[in-house]
Length: 306
Ligand code: 13P
Ligand code: SF4
Image (cartoon, rainbow, N blue to C red; front, side):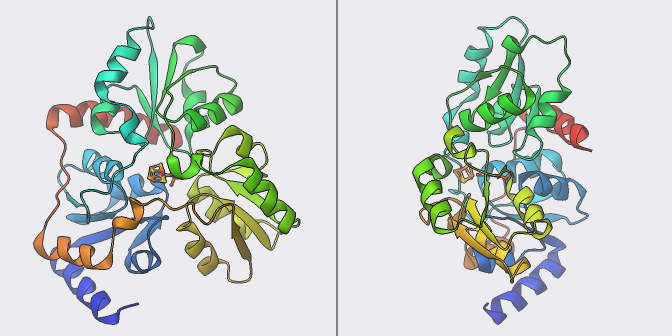
């Protein structure tokens, strides 16, 4: 890692009372300079808890936006404003409003991979690590037919299976995860028959079916050191391989697909991190009216998980 950049960043962080949060899919050099590397849920908790005045969010836009919704008094900076999430863009607030009209008293569960405007139209958020518990928290009076889940059809299908509640699921997906096919998992299993298979629930149901565990990125990082296995087939974005290997040097990891790369996560570079912190650029804000509405479902989610 570039020593000069890291020293510069440490100085800037101290001067400005800033913290650097990074998602597990970030480039190795970003993970190395971050104060905390975690999954979506851990990152939103850290954003809510930190005493720092400035959060540099190394991840995609909805993650930085969630941090800003939780901590409006802090400045949240994103190193690249074009780091979006195609799945989050697959539903707009207008589309969700129309969808809700089809049901009498809908309860809307929104994956955190949504815009603030969509969150403002929902009742409770979830991430891949707490989605099943969030579903279980919905009271038994609510008819299954009135539960709406947006936007990920694959996570929706997984949660439906695990919670036993039949929902109305939006037809969105993550291109990076949806492109992983069952034959790729079968090939990896064939090549590494002793390996434990861990996949993200954003993968297709046919892929999840072949796995030993469907876990969030943070869940995978916890599972590996607990497992007696030495080899793992990993069905999620490639950035996680760096963290897994760093924390478990005696174990081996094989990606389901080497093409599983989220181009948006990879837009964040060290130079951009230095630039936003030096120049206080790319502040992520949410209009107060939307922020207040979007805060409630995120807070409800954090309470479920507590
Ligand atoms: P995690 O919540 O598991 O970190 O997932 C976030 C994400 O964007 C997966 O593609
Ligand atoms: Fe969005 Fe998929 Fe990238 Fe995650 S991996 S940020 S869901 S596009």
